[in-house]
Image (cartoon, rainbow, N blue to C red; front, side, top):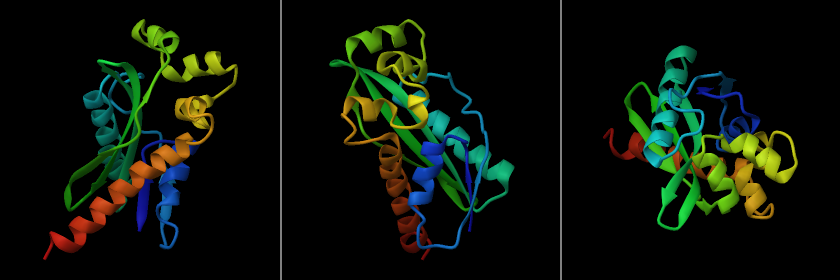
Length: 173
């Protein structure tokens, strides 16, 4: 099985590989644009970015499965929350989508995002670290390390793979 990952972000690549441990699979990571803003600002925009990455990864990588994973933020009545979405594209079915964890961002972070800044650099400033988005992510910072970005995206990947295998075994009969 040839799995094309629509990102070269190590956290996303690791999450995908975590979900195929017992299969013979070839993994190819490609830098696929999301087609949305650098900082997706809604569930809809984040979903669209994930689907765009998955479909383009499948097409450009000529694989069996294309994966798109996208992080964003969603405004709620409680404040601005991080969100994460994934999509799985294959040649024989419509893209499958799944979403994951939600964590309320501190207002000092939310203010900067609403002003147009991107979460990755804001988190680097806030945590006084480099490349937070490629390692623990905002989720890792704000859960005190109990959940990191790889785990967050691994959860989404399990939801995607579970739906994919269900559809392959139950809906193709």
